[in-house]
Length: 339
Image (cartoon, rainbow, N blue to C red; front, top):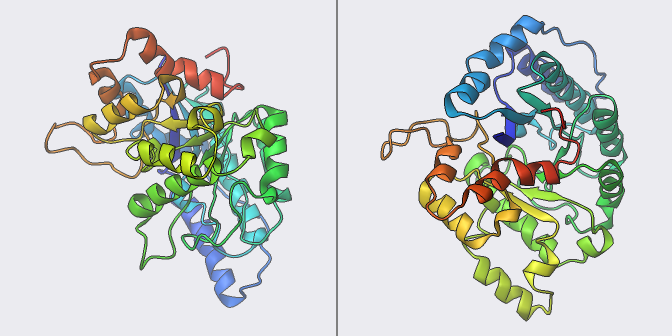
């Protein structure tokens, strides 16, 4: 089985964007506006139409079986409004993912957005994660390490602020993908290029310089987009660990941290596979996502990442099985056994 562990609902019907625009309009009139969830009218036929010629079509064409599916990351927008804004928005986004998993149970497995908000307690995220896992059958969550949208002025991932969420993740047996949202600090960051990859790298450094995994030995965190700069600079991080008197990376992070394959050319995937142990690599494409075009050098879509795994000259058949399926089932313990 080919499991894609990183897919976002980037093709949602217009009504979802309209709902968000109304939230923003309310906040413009009153920055302290306390949002109510309200209703969102989207039919099953609209949901089907939104994925039939997008994610489902690409699954068939590229030979993948099922996508671990979450709301659109760049739309999480945790810097927008307040805790009430994020709660209402998040619940609607997760509800749509749930409906898609019921319409297409063999194609999509749900992962939750969390209702994070700068300065707000983490309790709301704990409650939404519990709802999504226990009531909606989701198998993980996306965790935004920088709700400021690019200013990096919140607590480190190793801060005790996050501990109630980590405790609940371990209790439920679900991992988190560490994934930022839209960049609002636009003079410095473009969202899907500089900001995403910078945040991936920052997150790894926070993990390796802390005792987070001593406190939570069962915690599983996924760094997307191939780990940002981490594989390319693995020697730098190993050296920093030594200089800072930290344990070797194999001991301090590799029992808990995983990297996906959202790297969009063969040399990049080959580097990832040369540096990071196979056991820590999860297949992913992020389709339909940040890079949607065709590579003029190959004639294939940049985000057809299965092609790069198949094209690697060193992987054995057993290695490929781990990357495509085995590792993902091990990390996402709640992934349906029937699939």
